[in-house]
Image (cartoon, rainbow over all chains, first blue to last red; front, side):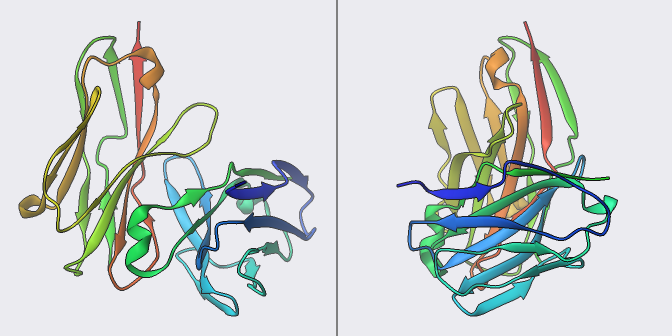
Length: 115
Length: 114
């Protein structure tokens, strides 16, 4: 099993450019989520999904878009990149409901710099 | 609302010292899950432990131990005889019964000096 795969690992964007961060999992997890990690602020939830076709906003959703057309994939779109979106992004997945007590699986992260 | 507080921003110890990382949480759920993750300098998130709200037994795994106290809403993490390889950022996180969302504290950076 590959677990949670994030691509790319590194990316530099110019202000105003758009891009998609990819996240795929092969564990048949219902729940998937995106976090951003900034110094001193821990990991903050951007968007999450509890199943195909269902998404919802987390703590810091502005400037980001998501969709969940399949169980396996949960891409994160930056529509018009801003320097404030410079961060490390993590994707995570888990089973939904009480089974998530078994834990969340994280991808290795994407380091994004917006200049 | 759910919240996790890690009041210690950074801790520095000398190798072989014991160190405790504090975690205080808030939730209205009666069923919830608590987690600790380690983030070494390489950047990945390494799962350390999970605990559900029904299980208040403390747990020990080698040099690591966890003290879960519902009465004080705390889930503290102790490293015994710390080593340089323990240097990392440690995150405490909470997931409530009625949501799959995982909420993190701001993390504690532990530096262990030889």
